[in-house]
Length: 151
Figure (cartoon, rainbow, N blue to C red):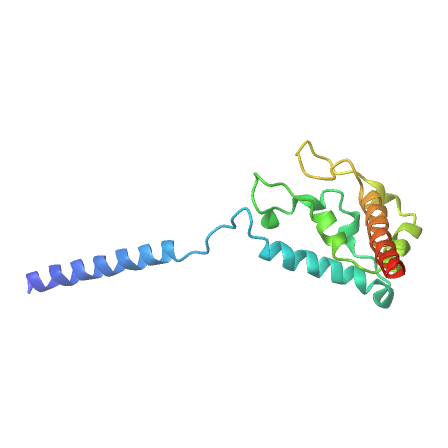
């Protein structure tokens, strides 16, 4: 009877050990430097909230976060800094929405990120990046128009 208890304890300990090991190794692996799937979802969500700005007439709060680039869950890695602000604005295609934001003359849009981190566009506020994006869209539209006229 005593041998039976010892063997069942040994089996139980083995099962517990295997279960713990499986649990540890089955955890979600951290993002690799080039894995932007979660960042893409995040930026799409924020860009959509801007695209429906006229329907809702509520300006999303993230525009007023001068340290928006530092959402730690969405950084791909410390060795590859990114600007979440610019990635969001890059997904906005409607110039009217961007011009509406500029026309608001909201001083909180002009706040700079408070960091010494080497993120891109750290010297620019959301306001500056919105102007930059408007210029990007217009340049692309003008180029396409030019190509049609040349043909």
